[in-house]
Image 1 (cartoon, rainbow, N blue to C red):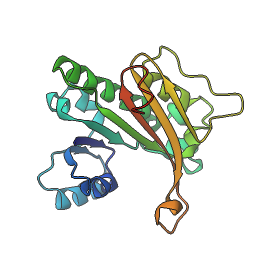
Image 2 (image 1 turned 135 degrees about the horizontal axis):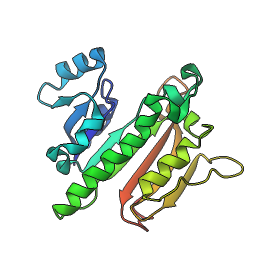
Image 3 (image 1 turned 45 degrees about the vertical axis):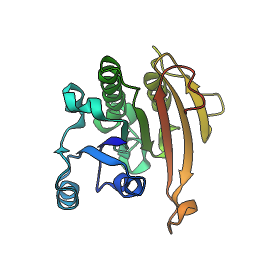
Image 4 (image 1 turned 180 degrees about the horizontal axis):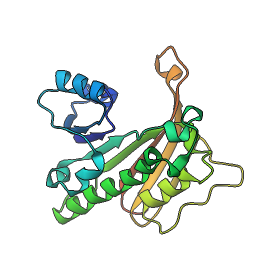
Amino acid sequence: MKYLSICSGIEAASVAFDSLGWKPLAFSEIEPFPRAVLAHHYPDVPLHEDFTELKDQEFIVDADLLCGGCPCQSFSVAGLRKGLDDDRGNLTLQFIKLADAIDDLRSTAGREPAWILYENVPGLFSDSQNAFGAFLGGLCGRDEPIPKPADGWTGAGVVDGPARCAAWRTLNAEHFGLAQRRKRVFVLAKGGAGRWAAA
């Protein structure tokens, strides 16, 4: 399994994936300090900056998995919760464009669609512009955002569309051996409608 990691930070995903034998295809990170850490620990892995430019690169066809957690500040109290009006929040929608570009190339090459793994803060659920519904709708290939349920988004669920099936779940780091409460929303998607078993 080869994966493309975007908004990589210091690459916690690679620490987790290494024991599975998965290999990084490339990283994407714009901040200088994390870039220096990545260059030190992964000198042989290509390190890109702006991930929005990767959708035009041919090498992404080899990504069996696209993973990333776009900047969370636009969905958090600390970041003033500007949602999709914040350039950082809008990267959530750019993530979908990259996922689509990967799957388009893989389809042309006769390959299976890539797995898509996305992570962000639970504030994504309560965004006033329904950013989570827009993300799910776009990821699944729908023309419109998925409407936010009257009683709000649940901590887990599955949605389907013409492009992908996507499942999400909220997980807390304290239940996985870390000494901190750190809730995050994880979305796992796979190309093709009706792939309930895969998601």
